[in-house]
Amino acid sequence: ATPTAVMVATGKGASQGVLIKGGNALEKAHKVKTVVFDKTGTLTVGKPAVVSSVLFSKFSMEDFCDMTIAAEANSEHPIAKAVVEHAKKLFQKYGSQNEHFTDVKDFEVHPGAGVSGKVGERIILVGNKRLMRLFDVPLGREVEDYVSENEQLARTCVLVAIDGKAAGAFAVTDPVKPEAARVISYLHSMSISSVMVTGDNWATAIAIASEVGIQKVFAETDPLGKADKIKELQLTGSSVAMVGDGINDSPALVAADVGMAIGAGTDVAIEAADVVLIKSNLEDVITAIDLSRKTMSRIR
Ligand code: ADP
Ligand code: MG
Image 1 (cartoon, rainbow, N blue to C red):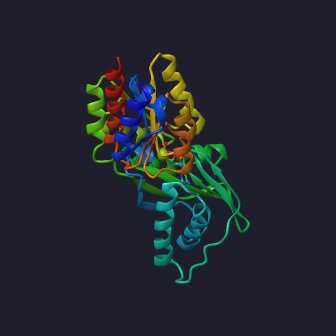
Image 2 (cartoon, rainbow, N blue to C red):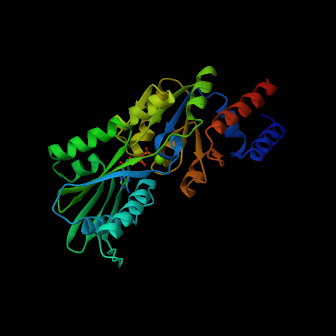
Image 3 (cartoon, protein in one colour):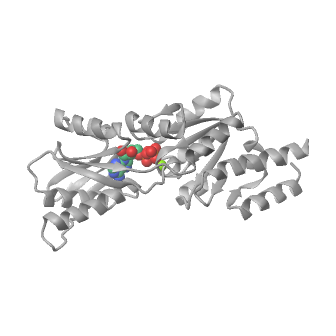
């Protein structure tokens, strides 16, 4: 594209909240045949809320919440924010009125799985089944039943283990964005196929995918695994765009032919992406590809 055409197109994009980082990004976007969507915060609103909780152990609700809050308060993940908010309410309902959220030591993030740390003398894990497997925490019938019941309902379960034993869990829902299904069907009409890649579990992922009309799903992938899936799709000769919010998907944004950061995004996402969709609206994936197609066709 000529410098002038690029300037016109990027200017037009910017006025609609679609920031295209230069001519190279603009040129690559018109060839896109596959769009890969992250789930949490991209296809879904990204404001998860806890809808139920359960205790599996003899800990009091107060102590259980106290330790969970201490661990999750350090996480940036939207699920962690939902868990903290809910646990604080439970804490107030069941516990003493004075807050005593204990500090956490040796805090560690396990991307796409959860967090771990030490609260007092106890070791606490908060995350999904993969995190529990990573730390060899056995899950009994009661836990498995709670998890599968909720996953069928497209809910994500957050498991809490204390000193190597399942202590309790939360079920979290995160509604899909109202425009998601429409955008995916419109992309289909442009001969562009849609794929979901997520760190979340298979059952929840498939439930959300069918809600928005996506047939190809990769679930239970960590951040580097997401990037690998992009590379696999590229091997089939397809030019691939990746749309993500930057939480656990920056490597995938970099690996894609066109990385699109959605939302206010994290700084990492904005850095990693070729295109930034600042309105958080999935329609802008189409805006970006359209703009690129129009600019490129005018040149030939
Ligand atoms: P997505 O690909 O859907 O955006 P992520 O890769 O961000 O999902 O996270 C994958 C999964 O890891 C989440 O669905 C959740 O089960 C778990 N997880 C990650 N971080 C946390 C956390 N801080 N607390 C609880 N669960 C977490
Ligand atoms: Mg995400």
